[in-house]
Every structure is written in structure tokens, then in C-alpha cells.
Image 1 (cartoon, rainbow, N blue to C red):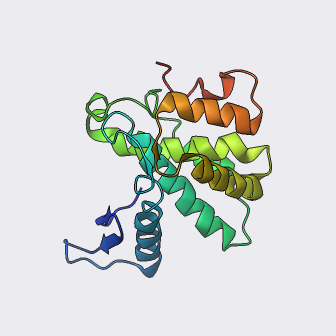
Image 2: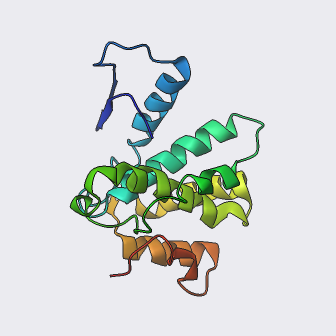
Length: 173
């Protein structure tokens, strides 16, 4: 989760520190990459930001971490990622924002991006993530996506035969 304020608008990214506290270079770098990624996820591939917030924030976090991991020789820390959600109430990531209470960010930003990594973990990791993002963008740029359409795409692209890979994190309509 990003702890410093930033905002994206079509063609414009802002980042700042309204609390007059020191921001590490690493945090600022991550924030800027996240906000730039919104130029694609919500800027060019749209969704309902209240009912389907996970589709822009989750994909933006997924793309942000993909970028940061692709610049590193480190392996993706899947086990560490998954442990972040052990103590969360098992809610899906695609609920309307008012159904999470104060903890929406843990689901919409965090759990959703980790579950996207889980989809590609055994299908090639970083390389598969890059291809998945590229093909998702090619298919949906200048379109609006909802959870059902995302599932349809992911099942087709990743060759899933059923919805089992989505059961623990998405509510079906």
C-alpha cells in the first residue's frame, strides 16, 4: 500500500507530501510508478471505480510491482505476498467500496494485485506477467471492463477450464 498521497488524471500525475514528513526515495519512486501506471489502468482501460475499484487499483499495483521486479534480479516473493492476507477477513476484492469499511485498501490495492501475481505464478512468473499485461491492454484499451469480462479474458488467456482460480478472491455476479 502506498503511504504518500498521489493522484492521477489523464495525462497528469501528481505526487506530494502533505504531512511535511520525510519520504524515502524508494517510496517516492513507487508512488510515481503507481500513478503513471494509472495512465493505462483507468486512464485507457476503464472500469466503475466504486463497484469495480480493484480493476484499476489492483492492476495498477500489479503493473507497478511488475515494473519494479523487472528492474531487479530478485525473484518474486510469492510466499511473503500471500502472508500479507492471512489475517484479513476472507472478502472478495470486487465488492463496492462501502462494503469494506476502513480496510478497503488492503483488498482493492493489496489482495487484488497479489492474486493477479498468483494467476501467473506457475505460468512463467515475471515473463508471463508482462505478456498478460500487454495482451490485457491490447484487448481492452479504450474499453470498460468489469469482473465478469476480466474472468472471461483470464480464463481464455491463461487456459483455465473453470473458475477455481478466482473462487478465493472474486465474487461472481
